[in-house]
Every structure is written in C-alpha cells, then in structure tokens.
Length: 301
Picture 1 (spheres, rainbow, N blue to C red):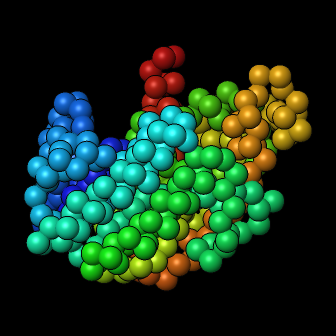
Picture 2 (cartoon, rainbow, N blue to C red; picture 1 turned 180 degrees about the vertical axis):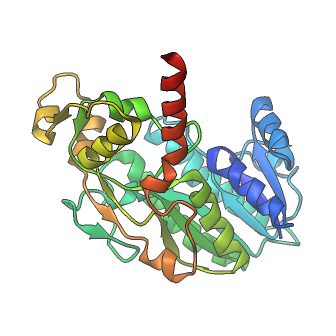
C-alpha cells in the first residue's frame, strides 16, 4: 500500500515506521520544516503541506489510503474545527476528486467523545455525549469521516484513541510526585495506537466503522500511581478525592469537566478484529520508563 499520513506527528511517525518495515510505502505530510525533517529522520518520504490547504495537498501523490492524524495543538474549539472538520473535509474532497482516488480513510479520533458515564464501560455502540466544545467537534468529525468518503466511492474508518503514552510522554513525575486525583485512566501505548491503524489497513478491517483503540485494562489513578511508585522504589504519592480537587480555586472549567468525566473504555472489538497488543496494559507499557528512572536514580547516588 501507499499510505498518506496527514499530520504525521507522534503516532504518525511510528505508523510510518511500521508500514515501511512491512514493505508498504508511507508518505508523511507535515506543514513545518521541522516536521518534514522528523519524518525523513524516521526513514520514509515526506511532503510539506498544510492539511487544510487544498492546493498544498496537490503535492501529495495518489495513494491507496489516507490516515488523517492531524492535531490542533491543544488549542480551542474554533481551531479544532478548522483542523478536524474543515481540514478533514478538504482532505477527503481533494483526494476523492482525483482520477485515482484512495480506497479508504482512517480518521484518528479520541475517546473523549464519550463524555461522562460515571465509571461505567463504554464501547463503539455507546451513544456519544461530548462534554466540551472541542470533543463535540471531534464527534462531528467522526460523522464526517464515516459519511463523506462514500460520496467519492471509498470508505472511512474511525480509530478512537484513548490517552496516548510512550516515549517522550510517560509523565512519570506527574504520578510519582502527586497529588493524584481519583478517577480512571484509559490508555494506549503509542506503538499500539499505530499498530492498530496498521492492522485495520493491512487486513482491510472496520471499513465504514468505528473501533476503539485502548489497551486491556482501564487503570484507577490511585492504584496506578501507587504501582508506579512501588516499581520505581519511591514513596507512594499523596492522593486527593474528586471533591478535594473540585474545591481548588485554581481549577479551570476545562479541568473541572475532565475530573467529572469518568468512564472505562472497552477494546473488545479491536481484540475481535485480531489485533495483538505489544503492550496490553500499563504494566508492560511503562517498563522501559521505570527502568530508565531506576538507572537514573542509581547514577545520581
């Protein structure tokens, strides 16, 4: 396959590496010089283009599949709409109108579209209840990813990522130092986020469907932080309840909504599709970070 990875960042770079290792032909697309250099350093082809710019996307060659993995950079709902909705629409239309249109699209979304379920389990059949303007934009983009490609004769898939972690994003100190607020963590290692997308592309699965990309075990934050501390050989961090954190004067409205949003995300469908995790839980996924922490602590003595 020739695959265009639009917005080839944290997950996209790993996806490109995995596709190239499987004798596919990935093409990473980023708008900055730095982004293009990182793609080239990862060992596959790069095109410099803004995914929201139809004329710029003309520089990307014809492909068999598009992976739309662009990010709004943590900015607000208006910027998110420009990227996730209008950028996605531009990409689908630009590639779909070509003589050699792609066969499929994979759009990377977020489990944040689920909203609050008071700690209950959610899966691909659970009605979406986004709690912020930004997650409402993501839900709109999911609908677009599933519906618009059909007008151009190909199919869309939504890969709904849980919280990403991995190299450069372990955030050990955040949990080791605390305080840690109660709640659940739904996570997936970067390598498995990329691996799941590669799997559905290679096996032509989940066409016209949503699949949640999350590991086997939602983690209760207090238990997760205590496990990390024990593994790293440090004292377990201080804890606070949700009520304690909600009482803080410095808590933003977005932070308040995050604390009040609780759910456990199921990966049963992804497992049924045959994906085998490299890091099925945080215990395997954090091993490298823990070993590095231990080595650094030993060298400092």
